[in-house]
Image (cartoon, rainbow, N blue to C red):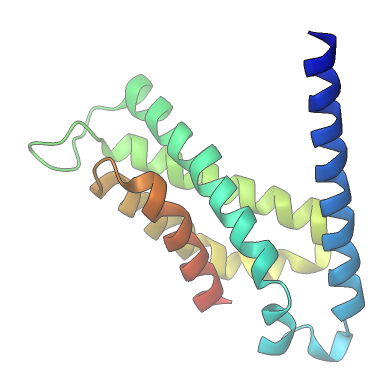
Amino acid sequence: WAAGAQGIGEDVSKAGQVAAWSLATYEAAYDPEDAEGNVFYITLLPHCAAAAGVVALGLGDACASLAGRLWGRTPIAPDSRKTLEGALGGGAAMLAGWGLLLKFAYGAQSWHLLRALIPAAALSSLLEASTGQLDNVVLPAHAFALIAALL
């Protein structure tokens, strides 16, 4: 058990190193003149892809299932078990997750990015509600593509 716990500690330490590297990359590329341009966002795309996948699946998909089971009353389609309430819960969870990532990773100056994240969360939530079992493959790629296109 202790050996397994030590391995987890090493994984968390590696994740912290990746986060520090990501922040250092961001700070090195940051220039106030580039803050609103496409060139600035291109430097963040690899980091955005990972975050989009984690938030879309880890928060959006899981919270959609939870919200649908707890409060779901309105089916998305007549032959579907997925509900409108679940889709709304998933979209809200994705938006909250991305908002928290923006707040803690990039500070207060990044709130203008929510204009891209709101439609990305809504459309990703609708995709999750309309797909079958392949949403674990499609949803992260879809969320990343939307965020990259809307930024």
